[in-house]
Image (cartoon, rainbow, N blue to C red; front, side):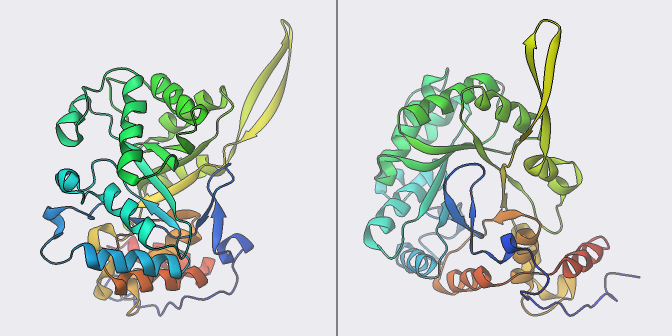
Length: 332
């Protein structure tokens, strides 16, 4: 059977789904934060290379932000380097989000941002050379200033980098929580092994690892194939030594939220001819990730996209439809 001959009609339904799938909001890992089952990524906000200032601008993004909150989407993901070209003009992604959050009070957004681990990030966003644990706290305070907040909801390590060890980064995240600069902490682009190490390091401080943000979509399913998604949900063995010659074995639930960036595979899953499913290919592709237990964060640059994303708050795929999609994607 070829990809071209596979033409199932998939409907986004609410039948045969678990209560977690039917819920509009889910816990962010083991934290008390409740995030919408679909969020929004703001990589393109403020970025001239993505058309900011030419094909779209601040007015369109402001309306989109308002529509997201009105429609129930409360999870907004950004990073200190998103739209960094506009920092001096007040139009970086963080700055735009901070401005919109003050202008639109329809809901309380859960805002996530990230620490860029490369030492010379200061050439992009200002500040000093990033060496040592203190650089993370300095960067977080700078992000908070751009966001216009005293505390961010989720602070993430953008990706691992050799100049800062996992141990140093996790200790810095612990300090950020203790100082009240962030409510929860997460990582991004971490492998299964790196994520588990980060979770164990944070657990030693009594701080949960809330999330791991990775590339995940119907055409790029590595997190599902390499055990990362399973590890986010599974229990693992913890040996507790009581004395020199005795120990007990306990099980710890990781319960780490997997946040899926590039959920539409850079636009490839918006073309209805790709999977031959129906005219709502993007919605199906996003619903697929929700059904897999991930939190997709597609881009959003206008009112139409915002409203389209919000429609997914009440929709789900059945497990049979998930299997059909995976079978179809395997032929592409």
